[in-house]
Image (cartoon, rainbow, N blue to C red; front, side, top):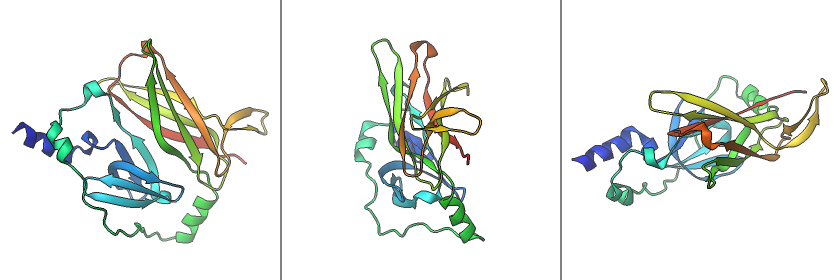
Length: 216
Protein backbone atom coordinates (compact mmCIF):
# COMPACT_ATOMS: atom_id res chain seq x y z
CA UNK A 1 0.00 0.00 0.00
CA UNK A 2 2.83 2.42 0.84
CA UNK A 3 4.44 1.70 -2.52
CA UNK A 4 1.18 2.41 -4.36
CA UNK A 5 0.77 5.69 -2.51
CA UNK A 6 4.35 6.65 -3.35
CA UNK A 7 3.83 5.77 -7.01
CA UNK A 8 0.64 7.85 -7.08
CA UNK A 9 2.51 10.76 -5.49
CA UNK A 10 5.16 10.52 -8.21
CA UNK A 11 2.52 11.24 -10.85
CA UNK A 12 0.81 13.94 -8.79
CA UNK A 13 4.12 15.67 -8.01
CA UNK A 14 6.65 15.11 -10.85
CA UNK A 15 9.31 16.95 -8.80
CA UNK A 16 9.81 13.72 -6.84
CA UNK A 17 11.51 12.40 -9.99
CA UNK A 18 12.33 15.48 -12.11
CA UNK A 19 13.59 18.83 -10.82
CA UNK A 20 13.41 20.89 -14.03
CA UNK A 21 10.28 22.99 -14.52
CA UNK A 22 10.09 24.40 -18.06
CA UNK A 23 7.61 27.26 -18.55
CA UNK A 24 6.50 27.78 -22.17
CA UNK A 25 5.15 30.82 -24.00
CA UNK A 26 1.75 29.21 -24.49
CA UNK A 27 1.31 29.11 -20.69
CA UNK A 28 1.94 25.41 -20.17
CA UNK A 29 4.55 23.89 -17.85
CA UNK A 30 6.62 20.77 -18.49
CA UNK A 31 8.44 18.84 -15.75
CA UNK A 32 11.39 16.71 -16.79
CA UNK A 33 15.11 16.15 -17.13
CA UNK A 34 17.10 17.97 -19.79
CA UNK A 35 19.06 15.26 -21.62
CA UNK A 36 20.28 17.53 -24.44
CA UNK A 37 20.19 21.22 -25.25
CA UNK A 38 21.70 23.66 -27.71
CA UNK A 39 20.94 27.16 -28.97
CA UNK A 40 17.86 26.01 -30.89
CA UNK A 41 16.13 23.27 -28.91
CA UNK A 42 15.77 21.27 -25.70
CA UNK A 43 15.23 17.52 -25.38
CA UNK A 44 13.47 16.55 -22.15
CA UNK A 45 12.81 13.20 -20.53
CA UNK A 46 9.35 13.31 -18.94
CA UNK A 47 6.90 10.89 -17.32
CA UNK A 48 5.13 10.48 -20.68
CA UNK A 49 8.22 10.13 -22.87
CA UNK A 50 10.67 12.47 -24.56
CA UNK A 51 9.80 15.96 -25.78
CA UNK A 52 11.71 18.23 -28.15
CA UNK A 53 10.97 21.91 -27.54
CA UNK A 54 12.16 24.92 -29.49
CA UNK A 55 14.39 27.14 -27.37
CA UNK A 56 12.51 30.27 -28.48
CA UNK A 57 9.28 28.85 -27.02
CA UNK A 58 10.80 28.63 -23.53
CA UNK A 59 10.07 31.51 -21.16
CA UNK A 60 11.97 30.20 -18.15
CA UNK A 61 13.62 27.07 -16.77
CA UNK A 62 13.32 26.64 -13.01
CA UNK A 63 15.52 24.19 -11.14
CA UNK A 64 13.47 23.06 -8.12
CA UNK A 65 16.18 21.53 -5.98
CA UNK A 66 15.28 19.65 -2.79
CA UNK A 67 18.02 18.76 -0.33
CA UNK A 68 18.54 15.05 0.28
CA UNK A 69 17.39 15.06 3.89
CA UNK A 70 14.07 16.67 2.93
CA UNK A 71 13.12 14.48 -0.04
CA UNK A 72 9.87 12.57 0.18
CA UNK A 73 10.00 8.79 0.44
CA UNK A 74 9.98 7.00 -2.91
CA UNK A 75 10.64 3.25 -2.66
CA UNK A 76 13.90 2.18 -4.25
CA UNK A 77 12.19 -0.54 -6.30
CA UNK A 78 9.93 2.06 -7.91
CA UNK A 79 12.83 4.32 -8.83
CA UNK A 80 14.77 1.37 -10.25
CA UNK A 81 11.83 -0.07 -12.17
CA UNK A 82 10.74 3.24 -13.70
CA UNK A 83 12.00 4.02 -17.18
CA UNK A 84 10.54 6.49 -19.68
CA UNK A 85 8.76 5.19 -22.77
CA UNK A 86 10.90 4.77 -25.90
CA UNK A 87 11.70 7.90 -27.87
CA UNK A 88 8.85 8.56 -30.33
CA UNK A 89 9.19 10.30 -33.66
CA UNK A 90 8.06 13.72 -32.52
CA UNK A 91 7.63 16.85 -34.53
CA UNK A 92 8.93 20.07 -33.07
CA UNK A 93 6.09 21.88 -31.22
CA UNK A 94 4.57 24.71 -33.22
CA UNK A 95 2.47 27.53 -31.80
CA UNK A 96 0.30 30.02 -33.62
CA UNK A 97 0.37 33.76 -33.16
CA UNK A 98 -1.62 36.58 -34.74
CA UNK A 99 1.66 38.31 -35.62
CA UNK A 100 4.37 35.77 -36.38
CA UNK A 101 6.65 38.27 -38.10
CA UNK A 102 6.46 40.67 -35.17
CA UNK A 103 7.23 37.90 -32.71
CA UNK A 104 10.25 36.67 -34.72
CA UNK A 105 11.54 40.22 -35.13
CA UNK A 106 11.27 40.81 -31.38
CA UNK A 107 13.21 37.65 -30.63
CA UNK A 108 15.90 38.49 -33.18
CA UNK A 109 16.59 41.96 -31.85
CA UNK A 110 16.33 41.34 -28.11
CA UNK A 111 18.58 39.62 -25.59
CA UNK A 112 17.75 36.17 -24.26
CA UNK A 113 19.91 34.76 -21.47
CA UNK A 114 19.64 31.07 -20.58
CA UNK A 115 21.41 28.62 -18.29
CA UNK A 116 23.86 26.29 -20.02
CA UNK A 117 23.87 22.86 -18.40
CA UNK A 118 23.16 22.62 -14.68
CA UNK A 119 24.04 24.63 -11.59
CA UNK A 120 26.87 22.98 -9.65
CA UNK A 121 26.75 22.94 -5.85
CA UNK A 122 29.72 22.38 -3.56
CA UNK A 123 30.04 22.48 0.22
CA UNK A 124 33.33 23.06 2.02
CA UNK A 125 34.44 21.64 5.37
CA UNK A 126 33.07 24.69 7.23
CA UNK A 127 29.56 24.17 5.82
CA UNK A 128 29.68 27.07 3.34
CA UNK A 129 28.01 26.38 -0.02
CA UNK A 130 29.16 27.58 -3.46
CA UNK A 131 26.82 27.55 -6.45
CA UNK A 132 28.25 28.14 -9.92
CA UNK A 133 27.13 27.87 -13.52
CA UNK A 134 27.27 29.45 -16.94
CA UNK A 135 24.85 31.79 -18.72
CA UNK A 136 24.65 32.30 -22.49
CA UNK A 137 22.98 35.10 -24.43
CA UNK A 138 21.23 33.34 -27.32
CA UNK A 139 19.40 36.50 -28.38
CA UNK A 140 20.33 39.13 -30.95
CA UNK A 141 21.11 42.05 -28.66
CA UNK A 142 23.53 42.79 -25.82
CA UNK A 143 22.30 41.92 -22.33
CA UNK A 144 23.46 44.22 -19.51
CA UNK A 145 23.68 43.69 -15.75
CA UNK A 146 22.95 39.99 -16.17
CA UNK A 147 22.19 38.44 -12.80
CA UNK A 148 20.83 35.26 -11.25
CA UNK A 149 18.37 35.54 -8.36
CA UNK A 150 18.32 32.49 -6.08
CA UNK A 151 15.15 32.08 -4.02
CA UNK A 152 15.80 29.73 -1.10
CA UNK A 153 12.89 28.01 0.64
CA UNK A 154 13.76 27.98 4.33
CA UNK A 155 10.89 25.80 5.54
CA UNK A 156 7.57 24.26 4.50
CA UNK A 157 5.60 27.21 5.90
CA UNK A 158 6.64 29.36 2.93
CA UNK A 159 9.49 31.44 4.35
CA UNK A 160 11.98 32.39 1.63
CA UNK A 161 15.21 34.32 1.29
CA UNK A 162 16.69 35.71 -1.92
CA UNK A 163 20.37 36.06 -2.80
CA UNK A 164 21.62 37.61 -6.04
CA UNK A 165 24.82 37.24 -8.02
CA UNK A 166 25.95 38.95 -11.24
CA UNK A 167 27.68 37.06 -14.04
CA UNK A 168 31.29 37.69 -15.05
CA UNK A 169 30.95 38.85 -18.63
CA UNK A 170 32.40 41.60 -20.79
CA UNK A 171 33.07 45.18 -19.73
CA UNK A 172 30.83 47.96 -20.98
CA UNK A 173 30.81 51.70 -20.26
CA UNK A 174 27.36 53.29 -20.26
CA UNK A 175 26.40 56.89 -21.08
CA UNK A 176 26.10 57.62 -17.36
CA UNK A 177 29.77 56.73 -16.90
CA UNK A 178 29.04 53.50 -15.06
CA UNK A 179 31.34 50.62 -15.98
CA UNK A 180 30.08 47.05 -15.60
CA UNK A 181 31.57 43.63 -16.35
CA UNK A 182 28.15 41.93 -16.30
CA UNK A 183 27.27 42.36 -19.99
CA UNK A 184 26.86 39.57 -22.54
CA UNK A 185 27.09 40.15 -26.27
CA UNK A 186 24.95 37.97 -28.57
CA UNK A 187 26.37 34.45 -28.48
CA UNK A 188 28.67 35.18 -25.53
CA UNK A 189 28.81 33.23 -22.27
CA UNK A 190 29.65 34.26 -18.72
CA UNK A 191 30.10 32.41 -15.45
CA UNK A 192 28.49 33.15 -12.11
CA UNK A 193 29.27 32.14 -8.53
CA UNK A 194 27.10 32.47 -5.45
CA UNK A 195 28.66 32.04 -2.01
CA UNK A 196 26.22 31.02 0.73
CA UNK A 197 27.87 31.23 4.18
CA UNK A 198 27.24 28.62 6.84
CA UNK A 199 25.38 31.12 9.05
CA UNK A 200 22.76 31.54 6.28
CA UNK A 201 21.10 28.51 7.83
CA UNK A 202 19.51 25.43 6.34
CA UNK A 203 17.05 25.43 3.45
CA UNK A 204 14.84 22.76 1.91
CA UNK A 205 15.29 23.80 -1.71
CA UNK A 206 15.72 26.67 -4.11
CA UNK A 207 14.68 28.04 -7.49
CA UNK A 208 16.39 30.63 -9.67
CA UNK A 209 15.52 33.40 -12.10
CA UNK A 210 17.86 34.88 -14.73
CA UNK A 211 17.36 38.62 -15.18
CA UNK A 212 19.00 41.34 -17.29
CA UNK A 213 18.58 44.82 -18.70
CA UNK A 214 18.90 46.09 -22.27
CA UNK A 215 20.47 49.45 -23.11
CA UNK A 216 21.51 51.09 -26.36
